[in-house]
Length: 159
Image (cartoon, rainbow, N blue to C red; front, side):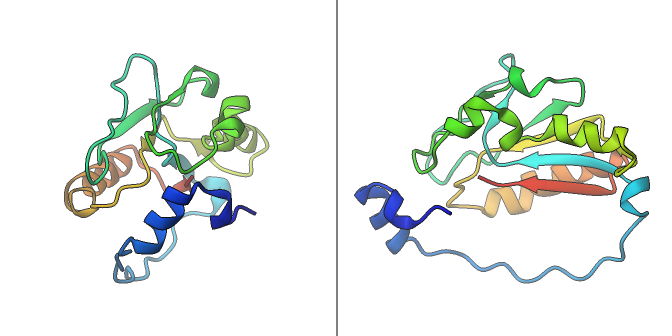
């Protein structure tokens, strides 16, 4: 498991001074169909996207946008433009399924462990230090998109 001591001195100091925000717990929502009958989407914070999509930007407070990744995408097609230097991308470069396990999700669908793979998946940039625009604008928009696609389960793969 990674430890803060693995980071550069600059990044360690930043984490020690950062004022993390608290979010009130969400109300409990009754579950939908069993996993074996559910449509599942992936949501990553690895800043992955198709080469034809705009890269994630290094902006103050973090890029709160997201990219839609079609289910037909091969994870090997994706590029990472997450601007934070606080995480090692070697694993994702070797196998993008580490951060975006679309191949594994397809295998689960083939085995009947999940009902089906969603036609769309989402990619965000993590390290958003000013999340208000994300909470008020982007997250509800992304949730609406997944609801329109009749997604029952969203699997978050944070980095």
